[in-house]
Length: 379
Image 1 (tube, one colour):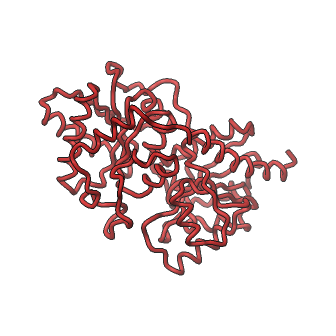
Image 2 (cartoon, one colour):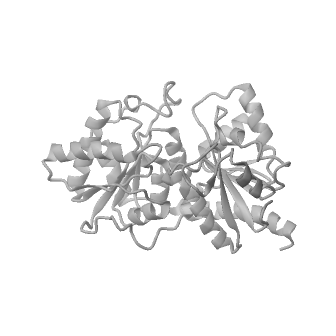
C-alpha cells in the first residue's frame, strides 16, 4: 500500500533517454521550489525497464506499493494514435479504482497523424479521470491538437517541465577540460539511411567550427535503446577526414544524466540538437540552440517559447512520413549555409523571456495538484 508522503510520476521512462529521464529530476526541483517534501516513484508505460528505480507495468509487487498514491502523467508519448500511448498502456493505473488523485501536467500530444474513432474514445475516457480542473500540455502544438480532438475538455499549456531542470555544479569527469570555446552536438540516428544528410551536416558543422573558432563536442542523450554515440562517431569521422584534423572534434561516450548534460550545455557557445530535450535543456540553461526538426515536436517547443527561427527548417511538412517516426531528411529541403546563418542569429540575439513564464505556469499546475493532496492528508 502507498506511502502517503510519496507521489508517482508516470510516462515514457526507464530506457536511459536523457530527456525523458530528466522529467523526474525536474519534478524534484519543482517540489523543492514549492516547499513540499514528497518522494517520487517512477512508473513506466513499458512492461519492463532497463533502470532499476523505474517500475514496469508488469511488476505486480512494486505496482501494489504505489497503489493509492497520487499519480502525475508527464512528458512524451502520452497521447498518441496507437495503443502504445501512455494514457492507454497505463489506463489501469489512471483510474479512480487505483488512486484518488490523477493529474496530466506537461503532456505531449502526437502531431501530424490521424486519430481513429476507437483510439479517440479510449484516450478521452482516461483523460476524464483527471482530478485537476484542466489537462496541461507541454507545448502549443499539443494544446491545439488536443482541443481539436476533444473540444469539451479544458486544456492549457504550461510548458515543458524540463525547463526546471537544474544543472550539476560540476561537469562530468570525462569532460575534455582542455577545451574552452565549444559548440555541443546532440544527434539521433534517425537519418542514418540518407547519404545527403551526412553530406549536408558535415559541411555545415565544419563551417560553424571555422567561423566561430570553436571545438565541436558531441554529447549523447541516449546510449541504450537508441545509441547517439554511433551517429556521433560517423559524423565526427567525416569532419576529421574532410578537414584533415584541423577542426577539433571530441566525442563524449558516457551515459549522462540530465543534470550532467545541462552542466555541459550551460557553458557552450551553441547547442545543435536533433533531440527535443537537447533544445529544452539548452533554453533552460540560457544557452543559444538550433534544433534540427526530425519530428514536429521540436517545432511545437519553438512556437511555445517564441523561437520558431531556432528550429530548422523554418517550414516543415504538415504530416509525418508514413514509413517512419517524424520526417525524412529529404523532405525538409535544408540548403547549404542554413545552419550557420541560423546559428549566427541564435548566438547574437536570442530571447529567453518565455522561460520564467512557463516555469511559473508549470509550478502553479503542480502546486495545485499538491495542494489537493495536502488537503486530503490534513497537511
